[in-house]
Length: 472
Image (cartoon, one colour):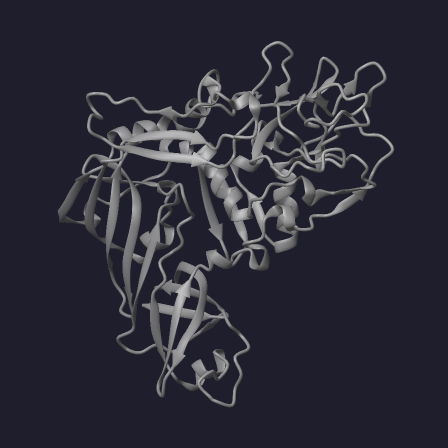
């Protein structure tokens, strides 16, 4: 039996009440985070429903609560959580629609770039430390080679490096000081403003905790460090999608609880919990080949960086080779907005050749595209950040590249998979326990569930539905 709770209260339903629940696997969409499909439903106007929904049908009443917390239960088991909003009210019924509200998850800050959000500030210190803790500090100042930082402007004492550091006196030069902010800290601060928590294996990984959001905004002439000046022109949803595309992340949103869990797609593809649906599916099926069987991995290249012309081989895109088993398959392009800097093979420092933002270089209006670096800590007494750390490199080729660390199983999955559409009959317990991270077993074959569309009715029993299965 289905039960709908709005703001914690069970609402009255009609005897023939039913609704559709449809979910999509976030592992299979690299361009957006799929939300549960929005479907409308109707509630009768009863004394109980009027009280819960604020007497919306009465012309004398204003509209004060524009979204209501909603939970769906089947046989006492929670199967979906989100929000409902009014579509309209008629003489004898309310028409509402259900949504996860992902498009408004972060409230007023949803569509505002990080560079325009006040994440705090601090007075300019008399000196900077070369040591930084990625778990607690907001930023660090690594040495980065950039002879073109001041463009054609001659700045006395500038030696061609951002955050130039003297290992003898343990002090930074006064020019071209550019703090680089830790990604983990930015996510945490954004969470404090919006009430969200970012958690999961990605957030806890010892190498990935050292990621920095690279920028070129100098502290020349500043008396205050305004954090937003050093952040990219990306909204939080854009940043999360870009990270997803770079590291093949599995990102789940619990909007009512304001929790974003960031895990690894490779872990999901490696396998974990397997549930047997052999006896829960109909015999009829539709099988289709996956015609986009060859991933093409890349990121945006900064056209204003002279060192990226031509594109260094390790940063150039990776395309899955066409083989006899994948012959005729088209490409699946996966392109991130986040790139990185090359490393000087002689000095070991990150390097670029691009004008920065400074009072000494006011004519520069070309902002760098968003990039990531790893904080390497002190190397030979010098603070550094490069495209590599531990077992990761932010390149598509070479040692520890992103294909090997983040897309190897995905590439194999795309090469071998096919789509199987079947009708399914689940119990309320099956639906309540379901997760896109689990595999399903059907007649000797394992599948990932790509999408799930179930019809919930007011009568107890088996829940019929349709499922898209991708062979693993």
